[in-house]
Length: 267
Image (cartoon, rainbow, N blue to C red):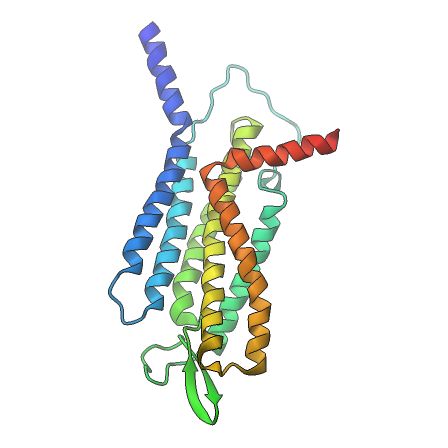
């Protein structure tokens, strides 16, 4: 009987940390996959970078999703229920979640603008939607890489796959079992994984636009204004990427700080 209890206790401890192992494994696999993708043979230096960053973000989301599926659902002797309904917005980071949503809207807007303004390369007609054609000193020239559909296709696909998965996981957490701290940790980790995908894509798009508009000094006043507008977005992307990475690795570290601030405010 004691051996059976010890085995159950050991299994419980392993399952209790399975979500941590899954999250860390997702990040590790994402790094390895990104290294492989960025070195793949391609006639275009930018496309491997697009695949590498997108692959890393999807692996991070996949690891957190797997961790959520493996998360131990506690079986309590006495279960209690609150009359107040649980809402997803009560589980996600109160400050960073709106910031990530705003960043996502800006990312989709930039990708949409890039898709509308992109053209085929003058020297590579087969690469449609990968450059911006301008007239520089009376000569028709192509600036790139530009975030048109040639490059933004994988990004849109990644967002279309990862976003519903993360929303489903957050709803599962909000309406599932577990104490408040466990639900918050899991919800923050999922938010962080989604933030890794979004912020890394924001950084890539900002880099692409910056390189294209500074190429050959043909951007003009509108290009200079565009560079000035996207630089703050790049800084925001670096901040949210760092926060998201820390949150995926150790959500309790970030959550405890927020909880401490709330306690101080209550006092």
